Length: 312
Image 1 (cartoon, helix red, strand yellow):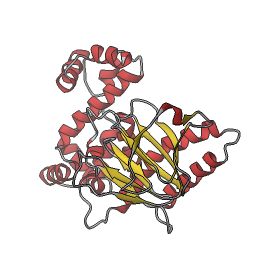
Image 2 (image 1 turned 180 degrees about the vertical axis):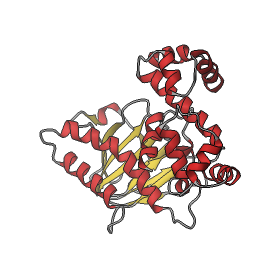
Image 3 (image 1 turned 120 degrees about the vertical axis):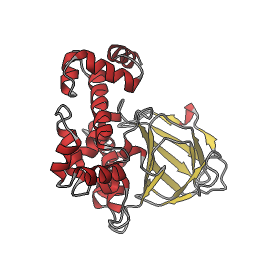
Image 4 (image 1 turned 90 degrees about the vertical axis):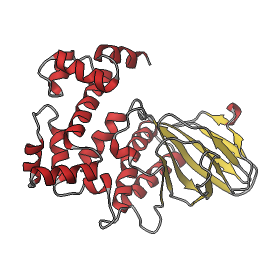
C-alpha cells in the first residue's frame, strides 16, 4: 500500500518542497496567493484560523490549534489570521528574514504569538494521479490527544529543529518536510472508516484491487491483461473489472496505460535513458510504438517532452 502511495506522489513531484516559518503576533493576517502544487501548514505554537478566499464562498473558516496540520490539494489561495475578522495583508519583502535552516516571515502587533511552518510541494497538477485527484480540497489533521502518532512525531521533530537549530538542522528540516507529505496522506487514509471508505482510500486496502495495483506498479513492462490481473485478485474477469473500475475510477487497462506513461514521463524528465530503454521499461516492444502511445497521452513526442521539461 505505502509503495503505491510513494510512487504515486513521486510520479507527480517536479521539485523539492519550499517552506518558510511564519511568526505572527495578534492582530495579524496574511493573504497567501495560489501556488502551483499542493500547500501545507503546520501549527508549531499558538492558534489561528485558515480562511478561504472569495473563490470558495461555501467553505467555512477552519480553527487551528497547536500541532494541527493543513494540506491544500490544489494550492488554492487563502488567508491565515489570528481571527477571521482581522484584515489580511500581502507578504512584504521586509518581513522576510533569512535564517537557518529556513527563512522566517514576521508580522502583526504585540499580542498572542502564533508560529507556523508554511510551504508547498511542487506537484504536476496538469496530470494528477487519480489518488491525489480524489483527495478533499482541504485536509485538516489535528494531532493532539494522541491522534496520528507518526504525524505528531514528525511535527514535534520539526518544532524541535526549528525552535532550536543545531548542527545538522539544515539537512534534517528539508528531509522532514519532504517526508511530511507521506505522513499527511497516510494519516488521512487512516481516518477513513472502513465501512464508508470509497475510491483510493478503499482500493489501497482492498483484498482484490490492491494486489493488482501492486502488480502494475512493480512491473509496468509486463504484458498484463484483465484476465492475468483478475487471477492475482482471485476474481472472475468481469467481477474484477467492475471492482477495479469502481474503486480506482477507471478500468484496469486504462490505469495500466496511465501508469506506464506516467513512469515514462518521469524517466524522460529525470534521466538520460535512451527512448529504447524507456520504451522497454514501460512495456512497449519498439521505440515507435512507445512514441505513438506517449504522444497520444501527452500531445507531444517523447523527445520534445524531455527538452521542454529540462528547459522549464
